[in-house]
Amino acid sequence: MNDSDGWTLLAEPAAVATRVRRAGEVTDAVGPRKFLHAGPPLEQGELTGPMRGAVLGALVLEGEAGDLRAAEELFDSGAVSLTPCHFAGAVGAMAGIISPSVPVVEVGGPDGRTAFAPLNEGLGEALRFGSTSDRVLTRLRWMGDVLAPVLDDALTAVGGVDVVALQAEGLRRGDECHNRNVAGTAALLARLAAAIAREARDTKSAADVLDFLAGNPHTFLSFSMAAAKVTGDAAHAAGDRPGLVTAVCANGRRMALRVTGVDGWITAPAPTGRPKMFPGFTAEDACPAMGDSFMTETIGLGAFGLTAAPAISSFIGGTHEEAVELVASMRRICRGSSKRFLVPSDGFAGTPVGIDVDLVCRTGITPIVNNGFAHRERGVGQVGAGLTRLPIEPFLKARAALAPSAAPGT
Image 1 (tube, rainbow, N blue to C red):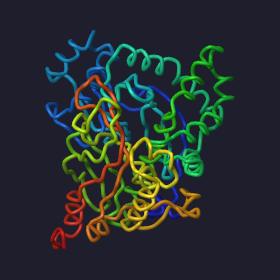
Image 2 (image 1 turned 180 degrees about the horizontal axis):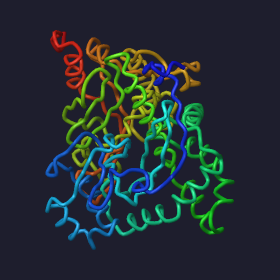
Image 3 (image 1 turned 45 degrees about the horizontal axis):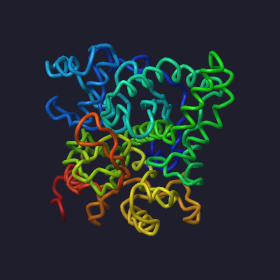
């Protein structure tokens, strides 16, 4: 592998999960009343309902406020500092709020840098969806006090886990490693189960940890996201081929691209897409796109590997035939195919990878991402999932920034 070649780093990713700690032990970007959030920068008054709910819940979790009312008063006073996860080498699903005691998995990449992501709480009612019930906060405290130390010891005992190998195996077993992580979770659990049993402080702790991991089909998502982040960061740092998209994220107000050869982040209004709503909810209930988990699409997973996961069609809407057409269209805007992420039903072809700004602008085809949806109001939680097509505006802006003399749309 040529480590100076950003495209090669995306096509042949390497990432190893090394430890699980509370976020405050991993970075000084979080601290008292200092949290991280998903997507590009936000002003305090711009927070969507679910993101605001997650911040308030985090204030209670950290003991900064005794209850949600006190947390609201504290936040509205301007006493809380918020920074994008991406600015701190992190990625957060949905609202992506990371406070000091939130447990995170850290992953090392091909160029020596690291990235981290919060451990997944499970589907439905969760802090990342803006839920703030006692059950949500109690679960997060248990995850920090019990789950994180056990997983950290288990990872150390096995010498780390090759996340990219598990992503590749997940594609072979029916995952796309974004909204479907059943196989990846099972493979991760198989890799760590014996170490968890040996390293846990007692039998009950081991059983509780194994039950939690096995009962949450999205356990592997945090590992997949952190691996995608460290891969994208390495490709961006290489920076040898301008116009390569190395990150996609959103905060419910705006989405953003990170592109080689362009300074900073390029933003556009956050899209809503085509959500498949849970019973009792309508599309009007859905908050626009939010989260950093679109990093998986950036490295050829998620919607770019949708043909590997026909079972997900019932969760996000659509059919396998539509997935085949979608992935074929993504190949038209990518620089090539992954060398490691191979799809059996596609004749073991690699997933499309390396989103190219110029190809997007010339074809008019924009990337599709596979995402969950939170309710617009805080406290409700997840209300659906689906496919979202990104707007073309940020790609046109990126091309203009790369070649100022080129008129957008030509």
